[in-house]
Length: 479
Image (cartoon, rainbow, N blue to C red; front, side, top):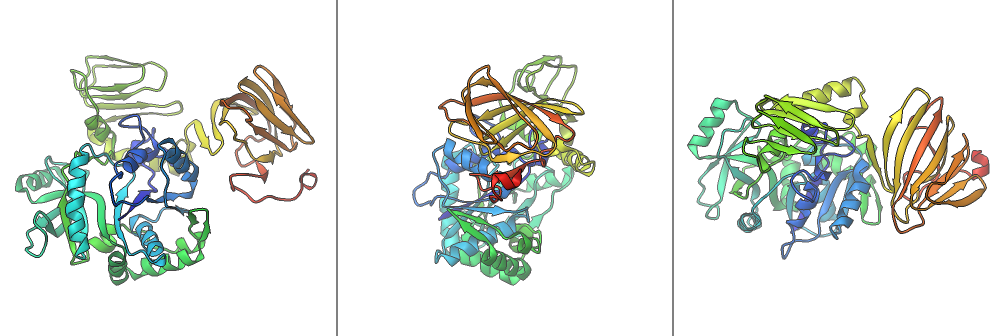
């Protein structure tokens, strides 16, 4: 059995904490490990292979770093140039397995869900394996125990041809209104659609080819044209752009006659909204969930997420407040499913707050925007031990570097020198330069940029150990 971990989502309903370039699956929202790491750790089960990870190419280094933090490795990293929903993602993984002669069971899991009961998960997985071995397309269904309007539903029906405890999928139901959701719960025949599946690779591809041949053909061609290197496959962008955007449910599961549902009563939560975050956390005597420097007075059933500065809340019920360095979101708990509408409006306005935090993560470390004005910008830069930035130059800005802690190895044109704590240097405009950390502790510097244009696209990379650009002409030619 090979797990296929789908990690390409943007988690827009958890904005402003979740951003497109650092989405919710990579955040520690429910413990000291991220949702992505929790998903991998629950797969430490005999017979389960290392995972195939499907992720956006922008998240490549985040994925690698979070794997290293928990001492795990992937058997393959499939890098999407952009998302095309779950059906193409799983198709690419299935096609690659078949190409390797491995017609294995595929356990498809989103990277951003919570499961509290590991034993119940294993029990459901064992039952699902029996059904999948018989050629069934298994969907894990969470018994609907309360009227939720934010989930899709599945109606199960008895089928004597299935193993005991497994039901045939009679119908899929879109997110219902409150009244219908209550009726579904009362009937006892309905499950929430968890988005978790188990089926054999060849079985999935047969059904996909029958029900959505455009996805099948496009993914087959995209895989042939993709670039392979060191356990990674970078999916061909031009071909993948032609692939229909569709989910496993719409493309296959709602059309096949072999869909069945295995009950999963394991404390599942898709952590898909701020109300879900509120549900999975411990609460105070008034039902509030707080993190950070928060002062509450006469408030009940609220979720307050602070970010350094004091957040005070007075006389509010069922309110969500999420404060980050560059954005604050306030919503009624009943409306948090609509946070995505705010993100869409911000995207229409071209706002950067939906893309990145002030803290931006790179393969070599991170930088945090401290202050900026018309012709200046101040950043706090952290470089990991042994890491280095690309050899680069800027056409429109100069930089001052001040070492706060650690040791910096600086390349500036034909000079190379070391800086230690409280020392500084000046990087003139158009100088070819590089910053590296030769030490064993993180290097922290303050960078002051000044010039007519300070955008991140004013970087001409001449050499990069992380493969983000091809080496160009010699330094002399670049100058």
